[in-house]
Length: 269
Image (cartoon, rainbow, N blue to C red; front, top):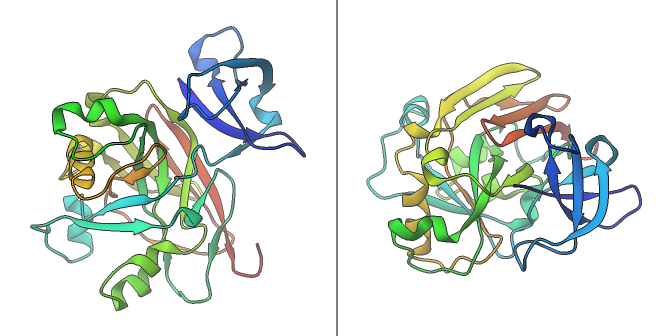
């Protein structure tokens, strides 16, 4: 099932279930509205259905408390940054105010001269949990979506911790929807491709992550209680680079879809 959050012109945000042409279903390329946030209760259809091209897709989830990200989780990315694999995990938090949805602009703030993309798999938590053992991780995952861990690379290099470099408003695009029926083994073999203006910049597979999805959830839940709607970012493959206003960046993950965002300069939003 694909869970989207969307709005109609002049309307309030609504949750819905997306059906694509590839599903060979009865209503291809549509979204069927549901009564409430599926993280808080069962999916119940309202009876309303809309063409996908007639709605505005929003961030599929606004984390209720936090976005927790895993840094240095791909060996090839570690190598391109001239670093060594960490003995202890590198973990940081992005504020939920950094979250935006598909087609919303990533804003390059005046504080940075080097804006960068990082295509990533995002894990959406579905229930309150703490110290989840690896064998029970699947029970607490609501689903998966595409993410872009946007980074002010110069600030990241200048500062000992990464909160400011990765926490500006618009620095966490999520979308286009949440896929809820993907298994842990499937999540461990997804292709991630990041393009800028159509040119491929990153092309990796989650099979190459140093810590798997299950290990990430177990690790993070070991120090922080996770709440429904919290998002965990799993790290990025090699190929990170510069973004400039006027460009468009896309993160495509097999089985999940494509997340695309334009880039603008602060003041031009």
